[in-house]
Length: 506
Image 1 (tube, helix red, strand yellow):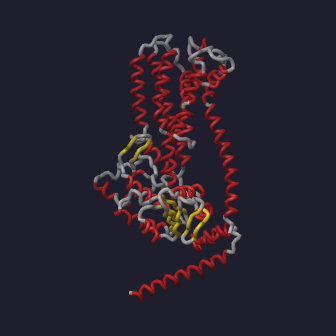
Image 2: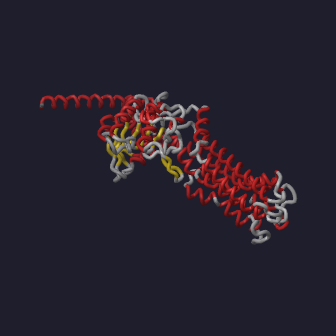
Image 3: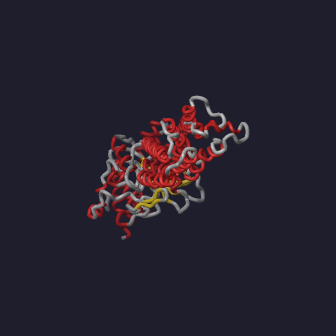
């Protein structure tokens, strides 16, 4: 297999080149600043032996080998653990161990030496030499360039002057898109999903730094204050108690929901580094955990409301489920956008907060009977409207409350956004599949050209023949291979002559 080094001046587009290779081919990818959830215990990573790390003896001697965290920052919270360089070595060793049982993978590394002190360079070089025996490796570096050039089978030089061309070995002016296609060779890593991944998820997310205990403590504090300040609320004050408890519930759950965006970003990068087997499985598990937290908070909300009231007018299963689905309608958009889209944190905050904002404007629960005709009909889209139709002494003020099946309408209104979201994701998946098939057809045609075949043979030598035959290249492969063999022999003779001249001059 081969080791290809991508070099160039700062700002020339080396990392962009790697990102584009990653987009065009499913590869194992370690970024220059790769994110892992900082509250992961290194010892908890499944199917990973941390004792192979060159610095692990330190933590064994300090008896921290079972407790040391990955460390770093997530959602603005810093957690002490491994240093940046140690995390880089952890990621490097992780993919080394994960890929050891498979062959012919494409492994892409962005600045593997960045943040790593010189005493650990031999460790990385040794791992690179081991991995290149079974896999194709493409890496970018600004450090130890000469060492890597000596090791490398190929060198790609990118330029900030002309980003449409690259230099590969001695070939000048190579089309960048053709180079990207030619680099994208190798099988996809095959994950083995098992119960270890589920155990790993639970161990990490239910740890003391996973956020669940923070929400629990905040909920106890908030609802404790609520009990103290609303105790012995008399009949007739139900609307005020209900509004106050709803606000407390929303702001108790909100911090956990808002950190889902950062969690999703870290989760995606962990999957690129082969930390776990399935991004979607982990996102669904996180969604399930988030919904469980919401159910618990809503149960507390229902409990404290009825504990504070001196009357039982808001008791019963109808009110419990009404409160639950009302809260769900206000918060689920944040969860869906945070976990299952690529939106930024700011965008998730804005669009995820829309249901709460629109509820204030259009549900008419704060202004029963008011509003412009026609526009007022939007109230039927909000679960809060149907919940307030159930409140004794207040439901009578609400305009247009259903005479029957109020709870059914409440549930359907709360599920409007999730249903629309699932439909959108389904339609997008169908569109992307069709678009991807079209792009793949175009890509396969580009891979059949003589230029592509010549470049792949330049990069991967005889090993590229299997791939070229598989895609049905129109080039004369035997002639190209013979030319490559002749060029290799000629290069070897030139090197031998240079060595002889050097010996004679001495």
